[in-house]
Amino acid sequence: MNEGNTVTRHSSPAAPCELRQGRYGLFTVRLNLLDLGAIQAHLSDQVASAPGLLENAPVVLDPSALPELPAADQAEDLLARLRAAGLQPLALAHAPDADRDYLAQLFRLPLVAAEPHRRLAKVEDPEPAQTDAESVAADAADAMSVEPAAPVLEPEHSAPLPAAAAPAVAPIGGSLYVNSPVRSGQQVYAKGRDLVVTAAVSAGAELIADGCIHVYGRLAGKALAGARGDEKARIYCLNFQPELVSIAGQYRLIESIPAEMRGQAVEVLLDNERLDIRALGTR
Amino acid sequence: MSEVIVVTSGKGGVGKTTSSASIACGFARRGKKVVVVDFDIGLRNLDLIMGCERRVVYDFVNVINNDCSLKQALIKDKRFDNLSVLAASQTRDKDALTQEGVERVLNGLREDFDIIICDSPAGIERGAHLAMYYADRAVVVVNPEVSSVRDSDRVLGLLASKTSKAEQGSGSISEHLLLTRYSPERVASGDMMSVADVEEILGLKVIGVIPESQSVLAASNAGVPVILDEASEAGMAYDDAVARMCGDERPMRFTELKKKGLLNRLFGGG
Ligand SMILES: Nc1ncnc2c1ncn2[C@@H]1O[C@H](COP(=O)(O)OP(=O)(O)O)[C@@H](O)[C@H]1O
Ligand SMILES: [Mg+2]
Image (tube, rainbow over all chains, first blue to last red; front, side, top):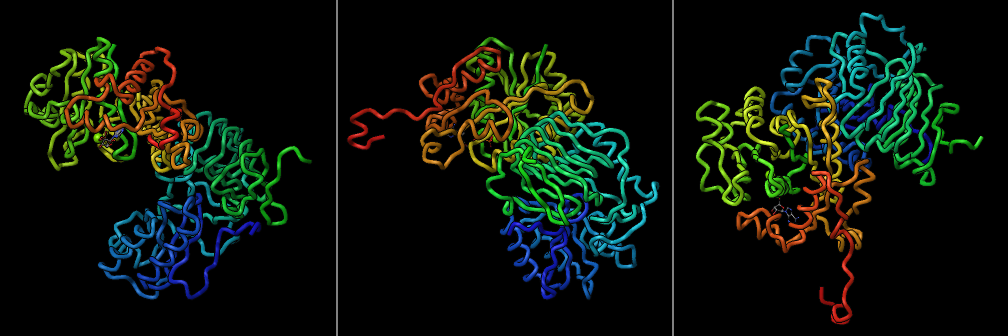
């Protein structure tokens, strides 16, 4: 079980839905079949298997693979079941087609751009104009170091960025420094650069960087380096007790992190597409 | 200069109202002019804990709506004439508190009081947000259990980013951690987190540790804030906490397991 999992965990085709982690570490519930009971059971299982990570996790609902459109009462029932399973539906992902507005009204959720469904999809560098929303998010993060509770979502007009594509993002000047604690529910995103946190990162907090992540306080939350696919990104940490670490989409949950690494000074890196956690200073 | 202190937690039932009432009395006993404001619209019970429920005529929302003056709504405490209570409204209308209204009332109170204590409702929604928004200081009430600690962590994050001070960049509000319902026995048996555990996870030192105590319930029923029960450990612990908030040094009490006497040990009494 020490293998790094990939971001996209493919469930068996029979699964009524799939839970996958996408952009900004946010989870997406992709619906395959409108079997409400089975969806709830499937998601409850998933939450139970990784409560630290999934309990009360905000999720994006992606109904685009459904063979038929849900009716109003089904939509409501579905949202209730997602909540009953311990997830917090936050937004709706859908391609811009005729069904989209109907679905948005039906679920009464804000729309976000659908994520590409293939990992490592090859895409061109997104045009700057299309990343407006993202730079706003990053600016806000710069200004106050931490983003409040709600994770940053891109509005629908921005081009979908692949979860783990590799447009070599050149670091634009320096690192993002955070000198106050990053607490549960907060998210910090260092766009196109490294992130340096000198304080503690609580369970339920999330660090995301397109470059490397350095944490000098206790890391009890999630850290996702190389968020736009830089496989050379690394995570350095003096007191390692994370809920999740990820580099360029390869991630490990707390359950698969060797116990002897807990509380240690470590370096996390990708070695042949495999996520490796090493004690710092052993080379 | 006046100071607005919010008593908050994220989670319900951890002891915010109990603490607000006792802290208010503690400051009043030290000679400060104090008012304690119930922000828990629809679920008011600060007036009960303060023992003034029969004298509530006007409430916070009446003042916001200009149904009455601030003076008319303030209830003077019978024990300390430098202590007043502003009761919450019983309305079910969650939008009864407006940001503009809260600011206006707090500014009015700042003119007459040294210390304004805001007893926050549970949650991180509107009411709780407004209770903390104008604060200069915060007392984050936490119980020694995982979910309460997690909620407090969240609230500490909001205090650092979602208050008037943070938004205006005019300094940060000072944060105190108050650990309540603490039971050294249950810590020793491993059912409860220790002071050190909580401090480590939240990265903050506690300003006080209030033991779990029967006298809290008795005090609530009598309408006498437990800090005034000078024979109770919870009362003494609240007094220590207020003293520390005023800058005094006091050793931590009631956090260690009591040594059982020989007879107790022989006969298993406790
Ligand atoms: N130290 C304590 N020991 C025993 N019971 C307590 C203690 N502190 C609070 N309580 C009890 O816990 C319950 C919730 O307290 P309250 O102050 O109303 O919490 P909150 O305002 O956070 O919802 C009440 O019944 C109160 O009597
Ligand atoms: Mg209360």
